[in-house]
Image (cartoon, rainbow, N blue to C red; front, side, top):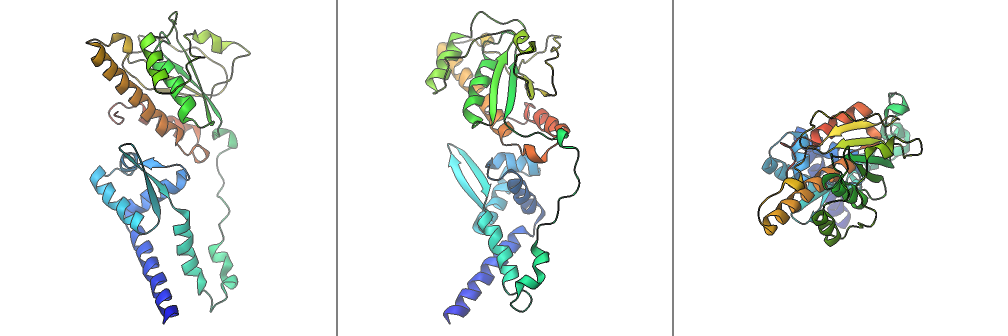
Length: 293
């Protein structure tokens, strides 16, 4: 009876697992999470990429979680999801266990991973670690914050730099104070001209991201090499008005917006995206209608 019960349990789990995948949105969500594994993605980002309302996506994610195919961890107010590979292996094991009259080796080719299809030349794809240069006019606030944040959220896979077309003498004191209070290393942060990154001995950039909320007709120089560009317009803290408390609130919101963009950016599956696809994703991240604090 114990053996029969165990077999029945396995069948019930397998049915629930396969049933959870038998729906287009859930299948798309699972494939998305598998593509970025072991990285997690917030529920809101999964909903956006699958083009469904957030509450609908939450229902689908709950079904996949109960089936053991995805896991969730809470970070602050965000629910972040990850593909659970043991769940998928269990489904495959269930299919193969009684295969070919108890001899699964006979049909091993059925479960063999096929050879990958021919892809575009390797140079069209990008693999970390990456150098990322953030630009804004005075290199005193937005780009400084982005440089500091990338050092923290990049997990060694990204190196952040910043510069400006008309650099200030120093970063805004309130920006440095806020970064320091949030645990960032601010010792190396300083305002500098983008000319420093045009020198022959400068690090070669993989990404150059402009953060100005208005381009003012500026044209970025050629920094040499093969890099991907993007524009992520953000408000200028130098223009923040109101009381000290109000300005601090606005600064915190700006920090959250930059961090949100960088978390999505660093979670992209670069190994499976060519440069054109990466460029498209960076443009999506910079869309202010999509990303909120």
